[in-house]
Image (cartoon, rainbow, N blue to C red):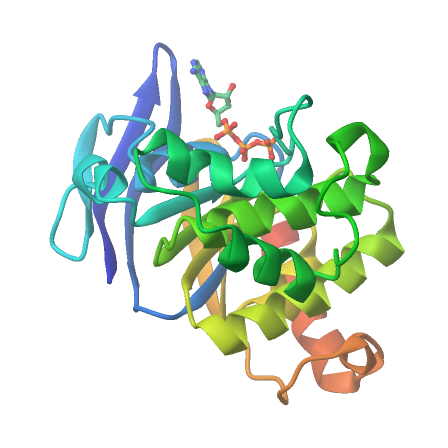
Length: 247
Ligand SMILES: Nc1ncnc2c1ncn2[C@@H]1O[C@H](COP(=O)(O)OP(=O)(O)OP(=O)(O)O)[C@@H](O)[C@H]1O
């Protein structure tokens, strides 16, 4: 379980995140949506131990984020794929575990790439992969680490809309198989509603939680959901809350 208690992160003259309380259950998929600059990335970085809180705190299964990270329990996926250009897709997946001193499990890495639709691209370098494929490799890399918690910061932000929808469908189905705890930050309301069990809506100045929506949609969530009425109603409700809290 991830517990945020009274979490505040301030930079010189900006309070990026103010008094955030949130509990995320093990195996839950939580999305965070909010206007640009409202503190989403800062919140995610604090959860992952990359940003020290000014006050309040974060516990991951009763441990500090840095201890959880040292134990290999947190995987990150960022907007920029951060793959190593000189390594193949397969080597990029195994690399972080090798860095951690573990022997590479090429079979697991290969299976993950296959499950992400990258069969036949194991030996390709990143420059030969499309943006969507690179993000698939980055997700496989995080899963190969064996982390229970995946922190994802706009991972599909640079992709075209169709690829973004496709990857959303794949990620949700992957999550149903693996049941990782996922915290997923996005600007996109439809993406937040489609992916999340709960959708956290942030307001800005200072960054705070305005509302948390339970998203109950029929499973499995596939592309047909995007056109469904319950989906569109939830998107409209989240949008309303965002607009109400943005000046
Ligand atoms: N290292 C830093 N030093 C100073 N200010 C920072 C730092 N990191 C973030 N901020 C400020 O904190 C606020 C929140 O930034 P953050 O990147 O968390 O927002 P965001 O919601 O992720 O934005 P976006 O959606 O545009 O990526 C912004 O005003 C930003 O300028």
